Image (cartoon, rainbow, N blue to C red):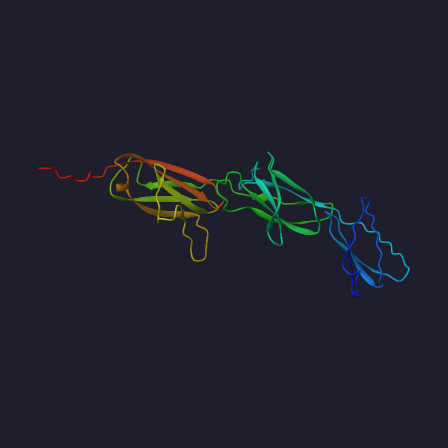
Amino acid sequence: MYLTSNSGYEDDGSLMGSDKNGFFSGKINAPATYEVTMQGKRTAPVTRKIKVVPGQVVTLRQDLPGPGAIAGRVIDTRGRPVPKATVELLDAQEVSPMSDTVRTGRDGTYKFSGLVPLQSYVVRATMPTAPVEIAYPQARVRVMPGKTARGDLRGDLIAPRCRIVAPAKGAVVKGRIAIRIMAADNQGVDSFDLDVDGAPIHPSASVESFIVSRTERNQIARRIDQTVFWNSAKTTNGVHKLRVALYDLCGNRIVRVVQIKVRNAKPHVPRRT
């Protein structure tokens, strides 16, 4: 219990703790009108005004709003339950984690219990197939005393579509070649990585992933058609694997591989005479 008054006396702002049965008591030296705020560990605060006169004993009896809960179900874009998704509970005001996470069951359901009522929370899910944390399905939920609020979440588990248009499978290449990638996704394409035999193809010395370009209005790119140039002379002649790993906005990934044959002219070495 927190006790305050507008009188300016020393009793202002004093704290009183209740015992295991909920009873509390305290002495007030200065007669005045006080505001008494009562709150339990997982209850909503209640404030009442009391007027204290000399020699009077004021008795307060107050039922505090009990804790509530949030329960929901995580499903994919086709309405199927998502097991083993991680659901996080956040403070709706600061959108900051509250150190509470649960995993969905086989039917995609989850539940948070013992929540302070008359507050808003944000529940956020990380899909189990997401290799990178890019986007989260989330919902804002208000909890009422003694009730269970619904917080259903809909996420994306559908992998994007992708193909390596050029070079074709089994193509014989030399010199500087164009690698053309076409892809599409129901939610939006985010990025893709290219490598040859596991060695990344860098667009620059410091960038490992080709981030999909967006419009000036930051619209979602649901289809892409991009070309990257690579100097095949940087590798040896022979058969190599060209690999693309493409990610959508929810972290779903698809991998495509084609075999190519590099055949660059061997450097001329003059004979000794």
